[in-house]
Length: 94
Image (cartoon, rainbow, N blue to C red; front, side):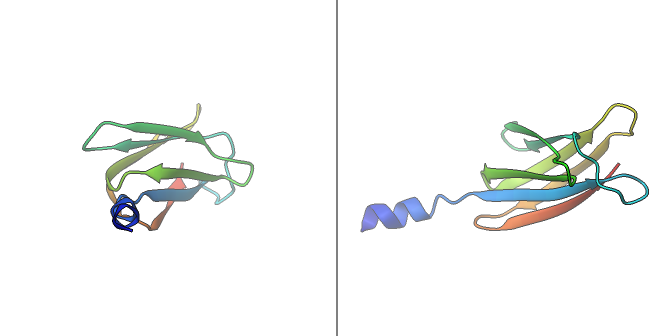
């Protein structure tokens, strides 16, 4: 029982979002990089057909999100706080 309680305290978090162009249309194939600002750990994913992306199993902390696609200005947002057991959603406008 004690082992279960201790394991439950080591939670994770996830970040979801959608990448859109200046006209509000979904953008597939955008590289989204999620970087833990305290540890330097990096997770990279691609937006899907509907522009959606997800990075799950992240350690709670402060993160920087960068989105890149050739021909578009790079999106960058830092100091995004991700907390245990929650899903944070961010809209990425390229």
